[in-house]
Image (tube, rainbow, N blue to C red):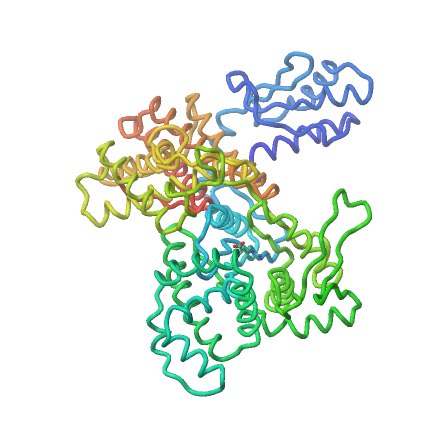
Amino acid sequence: MSDLKGALSEAVEAAFAGLGLPPELGRVTASDRPDLADFQSNGALAAAKRLGRNPRELAAAVAEALAGDARLAAVEIAGPGFINLKLTDAALARRAQDIADDPRLGASAVAQPRRVLVDYGGPNVAKPMHVGHLRASIIGESIKRLYRFRGDTVLGDAHFGDWGYQMGLLIGAAMDESPAVAAAVEALNAGGEADTSAFDAVTLADLDRLYPEAAAKGKGDADYRDRARKITAGLQDRRPGYFALWQRFRDVTQVALQRDFHALGVDFDLWKGESDVEDLIDPMVAELDAKGLLVDDQGARIIRVARDGDKRELPPLLVVSSEGSAMYGTTDLATILDRKRAFDPDLVIYCVDQRQADHFEIVFRAAYLAGYATEGQLQHVGFGTMNGTDGKPFKTREGGVLKLADMIEMTRTKARERLHEAGLGENLPADEFEDIAGKVAVAALKFADLQNFRGTSYVFDLDRFTSFEGKTGPYLLYQAVRVKSVLRRAAEEGVMPGPIAVAEPTERELVLTLDAFETALAEAYDRQAPNAVAEHAYRLSQAFSKFYAACPILQAEPATRASRLALAQTTLAQLERALDVLGIAVPERM
Ligand code: ARG
């Protein structure tokens, strides 16, 4: 089933072709003047320019060729040669009915589904999440859902940072703090047995406290740093004491992170860590060596990835450090191999902070050189930062990095306030009210992020994000809930939806907006830009508002009532679908 815009494009393109004009110029777009027309084609102007002919004459010829099209109520030439198309009410009603009957709500699936892996979130053991991780989670989750809805086979992987230098720092710090931990680590490292109950006593709060101290100390103290590097190398060699303590660190962090992510409506299909590819690294290094790609560089082993014609010099990929450790990029390279074997993706999308653009360019080039992927198969989808009012990446009032759990709690608190202010949810049971506050909070954070093109940075403004007015997540939830309540009332009164007819201007506009879902999804998919879907959700709720203000539903005559009810139901279904693609869930009532 094709959308109206697509179907009309085909018709106009065919008319162009019939007149010997380049067909692709016929493509139609939504009208700039919705008061005059539904769609327009500007192609006659471009064709006239190309062929040195008169644009109005060409436009008139196209209009004549389209005259017999029963879907069109009017074809008019405007200005220098724009072709304005207005659909009949019947054609709009037919399309609305198709959308109503379509489980995909009028959105097509891709012709050739691909296997896609989305690497997003990227949290680390112990290191607190910063705004980059928040955006990576929100945008990545949406891209995963978007690709899945378009018909691809998609897996989302958290790519848990559990194998780097921070682990050495943390192990050292935990040993310094607790003699019992240190004794058990050393006994195990020496090949003996040990009582590891001290490991089990390590909590997330301990890690949160120890990591910043250790990281700061590592910066200023070369010996301390050195020790952390050695411990990291020892861990990567699986020395039993380090390994056992590390497992504890990883487990407590993972449980907490999964809980926080879940509260944000972010759930990964795979929770693979950097450590999961450890076994692949030695054979990979040997193979890279055999392929002649590794170069010795002051005790380290690197792959040079610079290319002729590079605008600036890209550093090489550091594969093995002079201490013998695998680096961040090494695990990324091995992970490419691992994913190829386990999932064989056609495309891997790395949804990570724009600040890591060089890192990915370097890793991708190394992977292409090694034959682990083909050019274009690996894509970095970067994004700007969420800033504080000072214009710098958002920090807490104390100047620290944000913790996801705190961010969610802070937003929830604000959401509760907002609900009270608006007199919403007041008479509902406490647990339902909490659920609603959670959904409002998630909608606030996610919609504020996803309404911007991902490359754009934006300012964190909780007051604005949580407002029930304006272009916000809570506004959209409120609109969706309002439709739900209309539908509930209709059900109570025994009113059933029926065949859709279209007559009023606001009904026409609503159907045209429903039709535009396809275009929004296609654009979002092609540009990896969920903001197109966010914009659609907003427009749809506005179109519904106008419709609802102008067209009574339950008070209308039976046939009109049934039609409008069907329109409302279809709007809700599509709105919830669009919000679901953004990772936003709608409560039943407020
Ligand atoms: N853990 C990394 C960080 O905090 C992000 C991981 C991104 N994904 C990747 N495959 N490197 O910066």
